[in-house]
Length: 258
Image 1 (tube, rainbow, N blue to C red):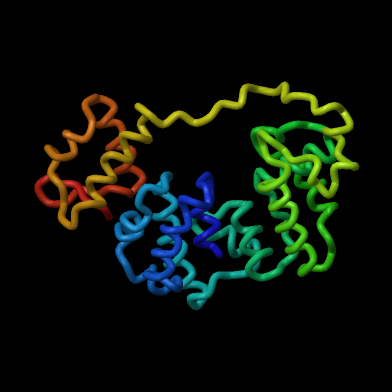
Image 2: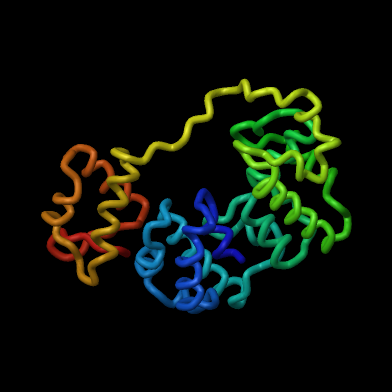
């Protein structure tokens, strides 16, 4: 559950599934992942994007092995203490893996609740206290029921109350929806911009990592230089990769995965 939740952050299910299957086949438990070099996690991550998540999963596996006897903890406080685990991921693991009563607020849940009660087409860019308080008040007291409720609302947002083409005629709570009653007012907040990729430092970083993933040996600087024409941007991207620990310097200035 922890692996899937981390992989699914900002990444569609269809892209995650093959990587997840290969990951779990190779590392079925935290101990097996913790025993590997972190660079192997980065290599297995492939092209999912945001590869720091691979390093965080490896770091979390080491902590789980050292402090939790190899078992992913169930309590929110202990989950939040793991590297790379934030509010949503901790709540999702606690609720769905262990049936604990936890407020699970992903973008789908936030969109459903925002439309249903506040009449807003989209939730705020960042999670706010009002959303947390409302979700907590709605959460059933019984832990098993609360976990099913969270999964149901999440599915409602993913399948029916979608971002761009909601299927209101199929929605089980459409007769109570404030957004529907208001005539579906359009979002009037700050511009919602998609994340560009082509030509960005993210793409440049991805090119460099791709070369390193494909090589079992350290790669010379000359090979890295051939990955991207813009020298300033390439050096900037490489510097951030080194700072993030995704790339390390090997003998004679060559570069490698950690």
